Length: 442
Ligand SMILES: NC(=O)c1ccc[n+]([C@@H]2O[C@H](COP(=O)([O-])OP(=O)(O)OC[C@H]3O[C@@H](n4cnc5c(N)ncnc54)[C@H](O)[C@@H]3O)[C@@H](O)[C@H]2O)c1
Ligand SMILES: [Zn+2]
Image 1 (cartoon, rainbow, N blue to C red):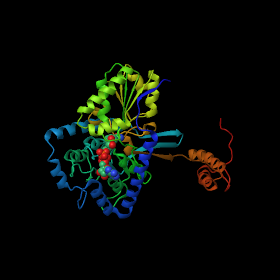
Image 2 (cartoon, rainbow, N blue to C red):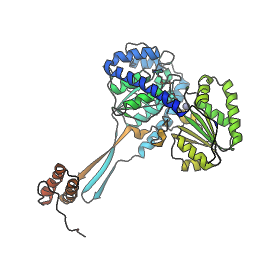
Image 3 (cartoon, helix red, strand yellow):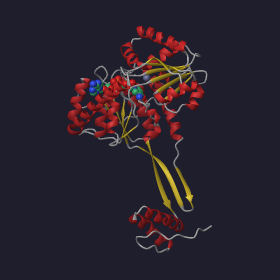
Image 4 (cartoon, rainbow, N blue to C red):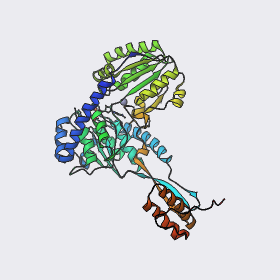
């Protein structure tokens, strides 16, 4: 292995220390919401977002007045994006089948997919009003058939962002609150005097939001760990530094802590990308955030071979992975850990995140090792059921069940089986004993 770092990000230990600080703030804040409900939520909204309202829920009239501020072109664009997201989500929904089959004569097993009954969708909006996140959470929940969809987003420049509210409303949100951060996810999951708690929290957010969801998991479900955006570009000398630099900075601009990593087997491309990034940072209006992310978290990793590039990429398990090589489909076939793949120079993460139709709420901090992104399936619960329809099946399964319960020492369990064997099979199994062995029929 010859892997060389031409640029490295913050050491792991420093990142862990940042995480620990965030976790402590989140823990105290959630406790406050738990004990003081609406009063705490109100104080937190004033403290973190300088936003003071008697109620943070938007009324129907307010929603209509806010949406009226969105231009026709913006409404059309939002509708187009939402249609793409909905179309793909519907196709994914259609791929999930309820099943029922006879596994043995008289033994019917099945599963059915049931929508989660209430969902809290977080739509980020601290630095940028993330209109697209409303499609990803709200519109996808609607496709799944979730009956109660609650949506929260922080105020942007001191007021609800019209395009975000429009996207939430068009997507099918039943309740909209102008709340951000820990107070938003805390209120939705824990509930307050005025907000009924939800069963599942979904949506991306900054480190506070992602950590709050993590701490609330168990009490409610969460979709996945979707924190600060990460991006990786896997490139060889089939592409140039302008493409690589643009794609790295295009996601580093999200905030001060968005890792952007180039993995390449071309030293020339690596060096040219490093200087191109410096050039672009001089002119990019969002360089204020992008530069900090690049300096603290940016990495350039030079490998000898494609196999090494694959290994490095799987190990990092980045949220967005843009592949621009002479063998993009080879990466599609072989990569195992990532949020989503963007294959070839004609696609890009921004198209993918805003409009193309796949879900942009994706796993960060290596969560791509155990989950993909948000999708319609995350709003559905797959529940099994069983029926035994004949006396013969009740007897046969009951006899096995009886003996297997006794193998574990569970007499009460065995008796559930024995009762069926006696009643439906006419075989007298003494209390506290397993069913007798039968001669194998064939
Ligand atoms: N993983 C994904 O799928 C994905 C997708 C889109 C966006 N994102 C990420 O979402 C994030 C959006 O972040 P954002 O900050 O712009 O908006 P946000 O809505 O996630 O967070 C804003 C809220 O953070 C809270 N906050 C800010 N500073 C705080 C502090 N010091 N203590 C406690 N709470 C505080 C405030 O309440 C504020 O309302 C970015 O990091 C972006 O990369 C991730
Ligand atoms: Zn992005």
